[in-house]
Length: 335
Image 1: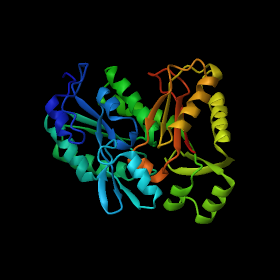
Image 2: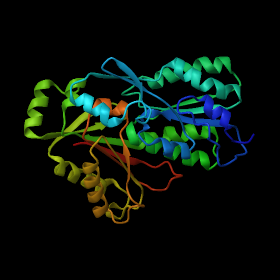
Image 3: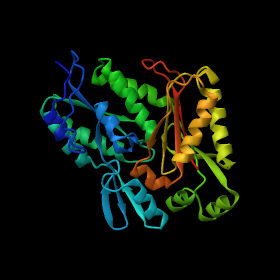
């Protein structure tokens, strides 16, 4: 069976009306659709080009509900401006019913699904997708819905999706792709720095007293995502420059070939492009063999509701051999 998504099916996925999508390659194997959540924090153009379908998370700002749809419903700058004024925000995941509605048209046309979710350590989207999988496979016993818990978030999740698209484009089946992703996701690491503790205090991750003291002393907590995909505070630093210096030190220790690392590097930021550019300049100065320029993306609304402004995240590969189950490190700064 040939691997080709028709335009009418792309429209049926509903979320971003990818009615123009046609897969560029044909494979002598089963048909399947590769999808993810909007919390991958790449951009719509990139995801369209990679033929990756996207399902929106949702958020509420004040008393109004929005889709997390690459800033089309509400511009990121307007979201952060409202948050900085104290307007309450709340995020909500894709429901089991939304997954079923999105997947059903594809299953009816004979396509299988490979859907990669936001980390189960910070969201219930994985469990919701499993419920949808069970219901749909009972309804369509001849079809398969493969669900992968990414155990990561933001553009680290996005990097995983790029790897998934690369592996798919090599001609691998849906089952092979799931196994591949379950292998490489265990080698993902996330580190976070933050100079603005407001969002953490609001979300209950840091006490109000600790937030006040930390802000006065310009303490920058180092956090990471553990193997269960949960956010853990690991270390405390003072100031942006020390945070970036720590990042460079960790990259030198962990990137393949150290300062001669020649793999890719992704960044994302939340309304702090100057901080992102500073981070890029330090990375490129210390890693002259880097593969191309660092890629910078925006942090989307769902993740941004929990971080607030001032976040820079950095992602890099330890081993740049794409077709090997390789680990790569992901570093987040909140500056």
